[in-house]
Length: 428
Image (tube, rainbow, N blue to C red; front, side, top):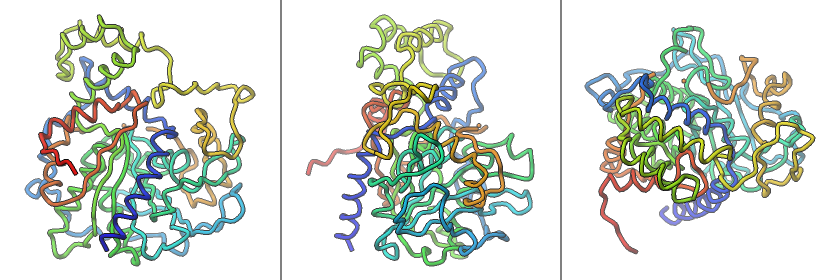
């Protein structure tokens, strides 16, 4: 069993390396806005502790089995319009109701492995933002399909994660992507707490729909602001698994790429990254270190001045990959290799937007929402490191990794956050 797990992780790391280099998403803008709000005089709502995530404050959910409209059979996708020939795996999409009273349902896309689907682990993927669709991760990073530059056809991604695992892409919370609620006030109260609660309810009910996966090893993965989502959901599962009346979720580990997990280290790491890559001046970096303490709107005005200067200095570059060319909005000027995933295409999210907003695609995906958006965001802790420490104490496998070309949540931020954990280092 250990050899199987090791082999899966080795293959997973190879595929992950490709994701880090070639990933493209729109979380950059959403997280940029989030950071600017944190540093403004009117910051986004903040929860300074993670106290809501424990048994005493109601994070144990006694019964989250909800009435459902969908089924495994009706969610199965016959074929996606424009998909290539030779598709050798099953894929499904649809809605799982997470609150029947409110009429709140989350959309998912699920792809099984072409080989060994009955034994390969289950992986849940969450994009960040906050508030960004996991179909970005699916169709521009790690699912079996990528969208061609015509916005109408698909080509095969040879580096897809479903080569080694069965992958669920979850659009969460409600209002993100195709997910929705019939209670409009739900859209005004999205945040970390409701996202963890609904994602847990999704998993419990999804496993009722796909009971063959109830005992399968589960890994929760994500990127960017999923540095909040992933550990919070994992800890919610950990707490609820203590309840013998609950569905036992066989969680084995979590992985977060370029994750936003601590406000201060992430902000400091970003500006240090800009400086060490010659994208900010010595004067600007010194000013940020002097005046900015990331106190949620309580820093002096000099801090804001130097941060504005920092953004102006690094200019108009791709924040997901500082060495990549910018996407040219005029499609006639786009230079791309049609159907080749090995070439970084800076415009891939534009193709995805066109593809998912076509009526025939939405019919094939069984959607109930006619307009798909990449990103749409109340409570948000400034730090999730205490949750990570508790998960480590429980024996859960945790992997924090970073690519080295992302300026939004750069490798320096990950290093600074991990250093705050003060963990012993083991040399093999």
